[in-house]
Length: 140
Image 1 (tube, rainbow, N blue to C red):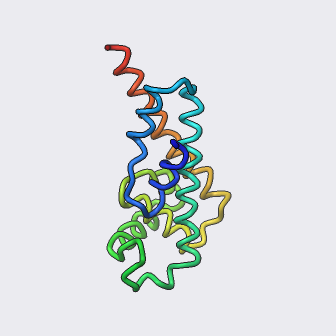
Image 2 (image 1 turned 135 degrees about the horizontal axis):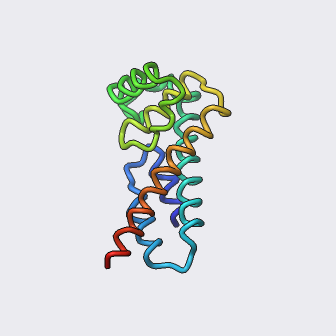
Image 3 (image 1 turned 90 degrees about the vertical axis):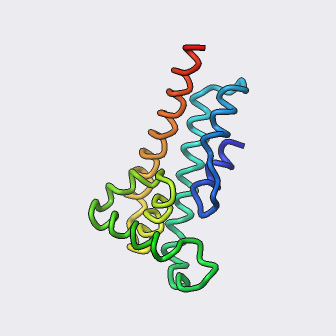
């Protein structure tokens, strides 16, 4: 469940994976490490979906059904052009993160840059979320 929701929330679907991760971290016998790994890998692969969209579907961006609005894409493109491949560390950000991954696909950023940087950013976010939960639970 954590993997699936993390995957879907990194795609164009407006989902949040944090609540599901926190629920399972608090209500399951699975190790926190495994939950972190499932969420991080799922979210990274969801970002990879946006990268593929950038490569193959960008020619349809003027269509109503296209998932990322031109304004969001332009914002992400400015961010990407300013910070280069290092901007991939921020694909976890709401709204603009999907656009960054899409722009990386449009610009045909090689996967050997894309995957490690996206994974590091998303894994760090989930590690911080789980660490925060641990800190809160220590006081209860």
